[in-house]
Image 1 (tube, one colour):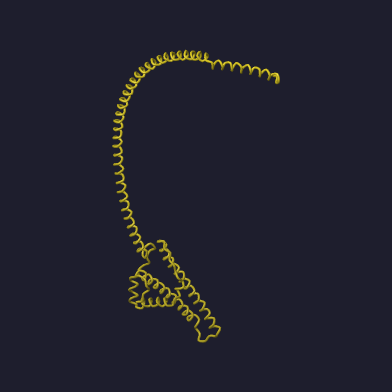
Image 2 (image 1 turned 90 degrees about the horizontal axis):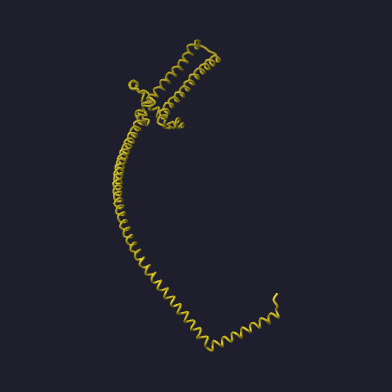
Length: 299
């Protein structure tokens, strides 16, 4: 049997379409045969006809046959459009975009292959009857040929769902672990805070005790230093009084010594000569001033 390179399901669909086309073709051929038979029964009643009569009969027959064939071709084209519409609608349900190659419709080799396929399928009347008995119906838009894609999509979604479940379980485990770690850290922080508070309290008490001791020590040192300062101050006052007395004595002795020295110096010849010279110099200065006033009188 000739094959078209399709799977069993699609090949059965092709057989159904060929069967449909054959039935239409047979019906249309019978219609055309009836046109000729009507012509014979209605017009060919005489033995001889003129050329005009024959021409008129042929023209009438031509018009009828032309109308029948045109109607069949139009119906055939519209039927193919409806078939394509079904296929495209099924494809669009799965967001597929089908493409057709119009040039292949006139491929003589493929047409002969289809003719051979039709001949092989419908050559035996017994086989034809068997085919009519097992003739499958056209699958609904959302079933039939799309069931394989649907199953694949279900399997893919199931696998993706399982992956998401596994990922969610992993995330939940990680979150639980992180929550436990957070709880442990919070407890550790609280314990540490308590320990720090206790240590601070102890440290504070130790610091207060140390400060009290230091304050007592400083107070004792201050009192001791204050006593020493008072003693030193008294000693300094006594020393100051004694020093003042000594200073007065020294000043008195110095004054007496200067007086004695001055008296002794005045009694020397050098002092007297110096005194005479100073007296002469003073007189000379007075004379010079008088002369200066003569030449340069004051304003």
